[in-house]
Length: 447
Ligand code: MN
Image (cartoon, rainbow, N blue to C red; front, top):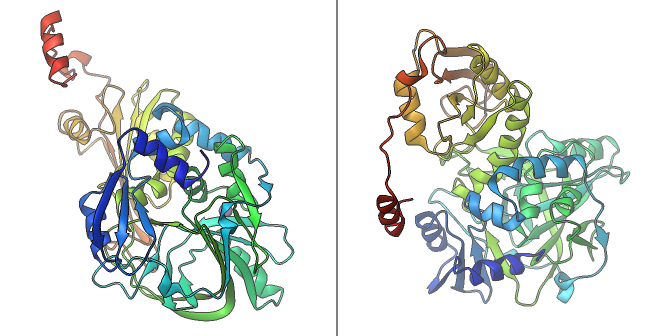
């Protein structure tokens, strides 16, 4: 089960995949349904003007990601960190993505969605982009939003990370373009690996291969010098022009607000490989899937940092309301009075984009925000438990901060109970439960 279809079959066998039979347009209609059913995996069977189906929301809950990776919730971070440390080389051969190979495909013939009313055009949002340096030494796989400019050209947002460095290396060595593959319709493990900040030089396909126990096979592209998953649904083969740019945006990013427009590089699409009946994979910008794929790898890193300070970490939650990026709740076992403020500093160091963080005691479920608020209400004192760090680097996505300089303010909240007061003052009162009450509540599905 190393491909999108295998995962769709598994979801279907559990009754978890919602099939939508109504004819719907790629322009706003599919995105509107995705937004209202956010958190559920969907398969759009009939797409107006196209004969291909569209899958969506396959990583839109923690439970779906745990299922896809075959892990219990508590093991995810360790699995992810272990895969980043032990990338496993993928085998290269042929695969179902080569059922059809075409020259210069027309992008208007693909069911690419237009999501929001102010979008400049259709955006590909779930593609893994593979590129390497001109000397072939460094490979990289990352997810980028790709705006369709016309039938043969895309532009994409490249933040200053690994692909950016590869483009810079290409410019320095005097080449005009970099060959890239753009893979769509992938197993969740591949999307998660491509979203994970592995060190420069590590191919995220190899990280995915470790996550999948050696189940990811790659294939050589037909028109460009690049690799792509052999069991992807669809691969676009392109040349990223080092010195040709176009206006990218405005795009609705993680926050659900419009990001600013920028001039970004252009990709010319020169070929495509796909399964004859490929399924196009969609991802709603700012939806739960977007927030989880961005946030989960960061949660793993925060977890690792916090464990260096206090060994008992119940959980880390980059909350959905905080865009999976700006707000974090960490639940720890507090041993010394000063632990939570050290934890707050570690959390901010682990994820520099973070804006607000809350530390709670181990009895508080960090994924239950009503419990978290209760902890703030009953255990937090503004004069002693607040950490304010002004004039510090924050996310470029936060519209309340200086987005150009990425400068803002971080706030930490220590909502753990003070050790100087008796524990009983802070415990939630319990009600004894008899066997028959337990049975009754069990039948009602409450426990
Ligand atoms: Mn990378």
